[in-house]
Length: 252
Image 1 (cartoon, rainbow, N blue to C red):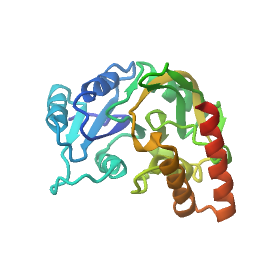
Image 2: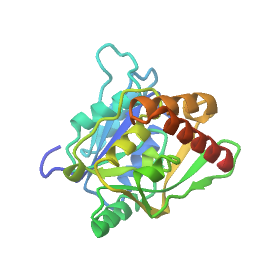
Image 3: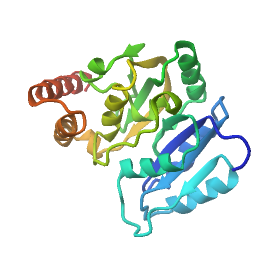
Image 4: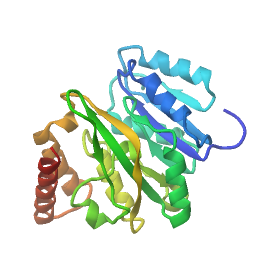
């Protein structure tokens, strides 16, 4: 890619996503806001994902494909996102997994809200799709503080975007689960709040059997992240995990 730098860098980890990758990429290409780059970081895929990513990059100079590390071992989503971050050139850092999609006005809506409010961190409402269930909308408040976020993570990773000029560039901690939540909590030590676009701008497709869909591993991972990455004391961490579990129970 040559010429002016992109304004937005979209970080996409990719592991065995040959069936969904093209659709995810197409949802970025369909954005009404066009000044972006998409950095796809392969995470040791054993299907055709890596070859497909290279082909998609060959068809669109805004798309860049990063091969897996030389040892071809899976490093995890956080490490893959961080490799994409190292290669990113945009002012705004956004996230999209290879099995999720954006709606066409997503970047426009968020960048407009950030410009209007001066916010350095933004998210949006999104729909969750689970096989056998109707879509469920995850709403977000207009504004959330770090204290609000400690009551429950309302920021879907596919909806987050932050201004690196305001907040700096920050990798996700290299942990198996809750690395995105840890980053949001960290960003909210650098800015007072995160603003939320109220309309649904993205679609998350939850696979059966994924780590995040299993309550007990997710609860343990949340506890560890709150203690080790977010720096919460044991009492506050217990209270926070309880609130998370209650929120999960209420939303089903």
